[in-house]
Image 1 (cartoon, rainbow, N blue to C red):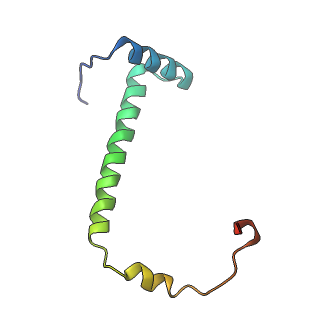
Image 2 (cartoon, rainbow, N blue to C red):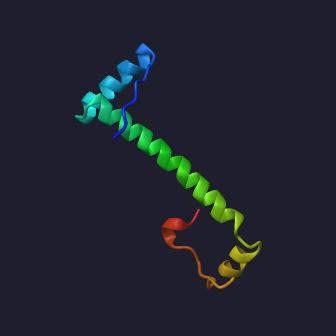
Length: 78
């Protein structure tokens, strides 16, 4: 496991301290979780962009054209 010295503005440190206390975790765990969530979001965006780049134009329309025509469910109507 790597170690990292991190300097944060006092206001952010106070917020993290409060959030960690509310969640019942250490400040270290709170920051680790936040960084993990951010990394996951960035990697997911990159993955989806790459997948979208491989999409064939018109393929979605072809798939949707195969869906039978049906009236919307009552809870889905405008």
